[in-house]
Picture 1 (cartoon, rainbow over the protein chains, first blue to last red):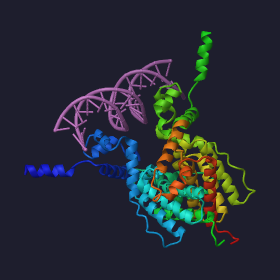
Picture 2: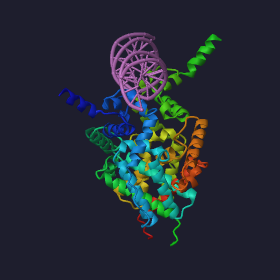
Picture 3: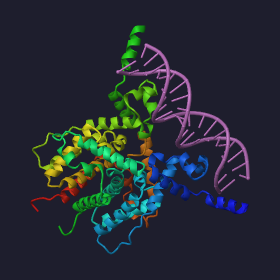
Length: 230
Length: 230
DNA sequence: ACCTGAACACCGTTCAAGT
DNA sequence: ACCTGAACACCGTTCAAGT
């Protein structure tokens, strides 16, 4: 009996690993926001001393690196090679957007780290290759590619009612407060803000925001492409 | 003599004001980065006790609000009323981009605060009105408008070689390191990354990045507009 | 009205030490 | 190899007090 309990306990918290820490950090950030991601809170949640984490990550920035890599590793890149470049590019960006949308609060960490880890480099390479196939120069492709990746991050982390609250309740309350504040504005000065107050404070259909943003980006990219048919 | 020195000192640090604190905070962030913006360091720089700042700002988030408002207040909106909607929209976004580009590290703070202060609301209202004039629905205009504002922030804060370093030396060193890391990648797997390694790590022509990003955004917006001529 | 001083809870991180 | 314990410097913030 005693032995059973012991082994149960020891199985519960077997051992720490880089990956386990990164996943726990993502879970913590998902539920409580980025400012709740603290070495000490993370360690407590893992049933371990704060200093234990320093064995797996040199410092907090290295933990951020690990988080970004873990999230980007979730992106399932499509096979490719059959569809036209712009269709395939959209598939790639959709895959990225899907992974980021699962962890909105983490997206900010991904921002500057696309070239810092293998999954990020794979995604970037793929985007660049597709833009090159679309007729862009090396420089043009890398600029447009970086814009596209940045825009994906901005979409999930910047959409109205996203960045605000920890819990769902807090978020909804913040949205209501924000909406009420807009309603109280002088209508002569802010006719458009008032007219769009719902859309601006919350996105009832969150997916729609992402989709329309994606459409706009793709329209911009296609608009800049040197198409042989024009 | 003694009196002169005293009066000089007392004139140097006359009194604190909300505005003075906000401007000092922006200056500190500009020169040393956002993570250097600390209540205590800010107070020390102002020759004052940390707690003195709490008279002018309820907490650090209120200071962030003040910073965002101050930066957005720098935006000089064009007169308007003469040019077509898309030309004028570009002027407005250019003015915003210009103000943000002056304080890249601060841009992140502006992100979720466009509706939290008067200058931000004025800019947003203007953008929405122009999109409405371009034929977009209330919902479509607010979505596109938010994307546009988000994209401006993303541009100045996400451009390669921007987010890295405090001092200029550190930044250049980080760019070199990053470039070397790309060079060391396997060329078979990452042909496009290698080909574009300079563009991806630094932007020799920083303004060009911003300009091309703006062009792409405008192309996307025009592409989604319901033009009567098509 | 505006600022100080002391105190509290929390943070990231180092370093020596345990197993 | 992996983790603990004690310690350090720094952080945001409260509260009572000064002028």
